[in-house]
Length: 126
Image 1 (tube, one colour):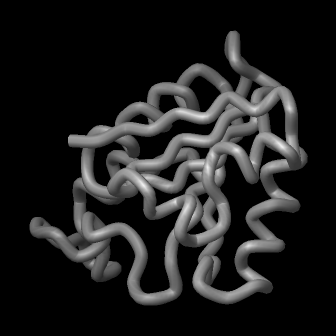
Image 2: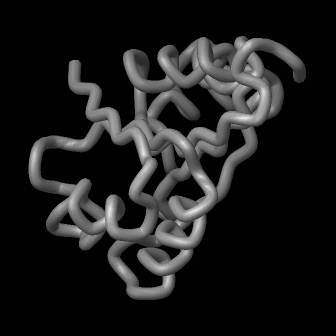
């Protein structure tokens, strides 16, 4: 998709509404967004009613249109390393974990900034 954010790469580690809506707007403006979900089911919106014929929640479809996705287990070293590789090529990372969770997983701001000094790191709660 072309747009003013064409060429911008975004990693979306968010769930439910505020974060996915933010990254949806970035995608709609042309950014390449990759939704990063955990192995245990991912975004809760996937199963929130109303559910589409494919078994996915309608809100999930709406909030994640135009995004690519990947599942990573950030509790394992391999998952952490894969995220770090993605961060090296990203411009923006948006996450919606409780404060301290990303640090506990070994992928907090200070760690990821070492992988990509130009990374814009956004924390969204709510």
